[in-house]
Length: 398
Image 1 (cartoon, rainbow, N blue to C red):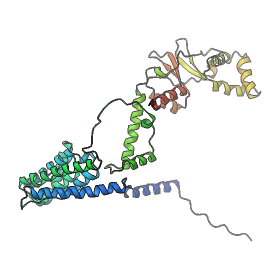
Image 2: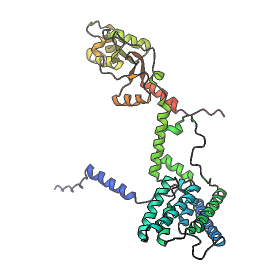
Image 3: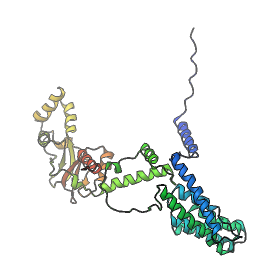
Image 4: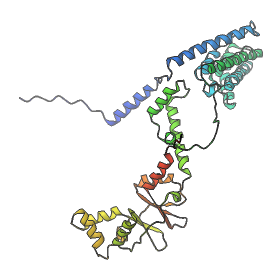
């Protein structure tokens, strides 16, 4: 008695699988990435935020406090987080914190004077604050919150910009500077290259950066970054590719090509072409006309493939018999050469060769001058040798 086979589970189509993968990736974007901080760094952030805010509030209570003004405005909490948690962020530097917040508070005060409706004033205040901070390069997100707070509270007294706003900001920056330096954080953090100079290319700076490499670097960084991991990886990859192009960008084909180049003519015999390859130990010969213009290329592979179909003997004897001993006058270089041959100019950049070799799956490319005459030959080996030299690590003589 035969048993019925259970029905096989339905298979999902490639399109369904692709849609499911995109949906899963979309849902994963709602989950935050892991914080690259250890317990000690977290404790430093928590203690620092509490200490600097407490001392800032004490300073505002002590100096010039008025009954009708608060001694610590709410946006200071967000500013403290940026100053202590992300001291290397461009938005946490002194000018964005002080300048951005003060200008935003001024935008809120102006909005109150112009628009009686608090809701409209708050919206205009935030938009104006963003515009001013971006134009003056002092973008500080808590500044937008400060502008909205000024508009909603309806502050008409301009003296609030000095106390507590300016007082809070100056004291907070001074305290955060001292705390960051005491706990080993550089602040203010440099936002520009200190020594813009040419750096010798190395494998470490030009190699392809993988996800694991970035994770390892973030683990050693032990800090909070105000940029997503995906954006950071994209920036590093872009910088790596730009450095690679810059490193090889000044190398021309004439610097890499083999010259003088050995060439043959379309009317030359196969035997002469093979002898020329053997004599100079090359695997390809450009074919030129009487004016030294490239009209084709013939390779050792072309000779071997034709030999396999020309004689029925063993492989080694086939090539030897057909190439060296066959006297057929009709077998010329022009009969076997590849007429459609890619070629590059002597002054072309070497980086352009990568696309030429990969696109056409070539192994040899003739080099011509401005007049179109053959002046050299570049092989994949020449290209790889130059790339290896550009990516080589500098020697450590110490």
